[in-house]
Length: 254
Length: 254
DNA sequence: TAGTGGTCTAGACCACCAA
DNA sequence: TGGTGGTCTAGACCACTAA
Image 1 (tube, chains in turn red, brown, orange, purple):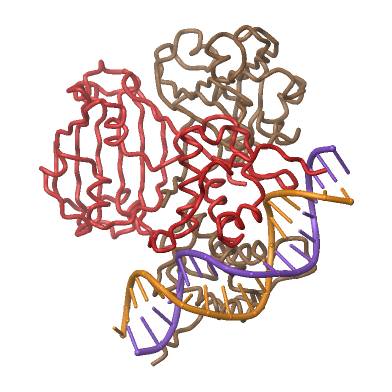
Image 2 (cartoon, protein in one colour):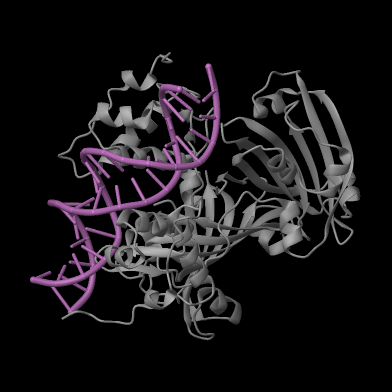
């Protein structure tokens, strides 16, 4: 006997526009994603089998699979052989992204501002040169910034960049975040290696950040790579632990 | 004129075993990955075009593409339309994984051991119930452990688990990590929401961890979900900042 | 046993990039 | 202008799950 349960996707008006330059699988995955986000596809509901889905929408099965796979990769759907494809049971948060403090603060409505403390070119120390994969003693751009939220210090950011990579003004650095400037100038950010730790503030660090000496600080070191694998930035950052924590969502690699 | 450069993959002895139960695309991607790791494919080298590659190995192009795509997802390869597929220029570290302190310490050769301080069932507080998605006041399993490396305290771990999920003994908890126990009992870990911060140690916390009161500690809160999206664990952990930092690799979502 | 996703094939046309 | 990856099709057989 055929298990004839209500097929939630039947009410979804799925379809694609073949005259659009947007890939068909992407159009489809966006429709599924919107339906999940708006609650039209509730957690646990089945998408229906791929072959029937493909027939109904007028696509081939591989294309439908590609759409579904992209949402599985995002953690929104789960596939079970012999069972079907379901919406995951609980709300998954934002997927992990290369976090930008500026964007994080702005998204939280905390009105980020930046004070540029230093913006210069100097010769690379061994440690900086090693992180950026350039020769020791060659030129590097150094930027030190104080990041504030609602006028209160949140973090002290020190970045080293390879020379000639990014032509930015101090005004631009005060108006937005470093990652946005990079993306805007066509640098394709790809990955980053991060180390997050903690230590007590020195007297000078405490003064800059508005904390007493010895106060706990979050530390982050990060090297960011573009999509050819070249280092485009090395950062050494200090965060007021009383004002900031890193939040992120991890997906397990199968 | 045909650009006839040395084709590094020609010396790679690529091939698949069709009698193996391992998927063909997976066999192929493993061969590429091994070649990259061993330096037989150096950064920047081209893989050769997909159609020719498929012909030489005796696979269809989609299968070869699937193999390549999995390495692109891992950050080992870069595709450029009109150019080809290249090995990324710098060695990328381990991809981001749901980190297990036990595994991290073991991989670093730091001989992790565990002392179970508490292993009991109690009724869920509002905060714990909310994180685990269960009713307030219902039973939860609580585990408190001290994790040591080379006999020195590194972290204090407190976990809450929904009842009936995992039947573990105190001996098992002393012998291995919680994630390994979960995987061993068939729980498919899927994702986690983490928050990492810092604060000063209280006198009691300092005593347990071998730090003076007021010493900086790394804090982590984590809720872990299985592949149906149900919460399987909520943890509140304290790490000695002098002995431990989180290291991880992030990939930017395209 | 019936139904599902997992894998694989052999083509096709298009969009982008470098020379 | 030629070569590359990006997308798409219409099938096929297999492995796993639930009943």
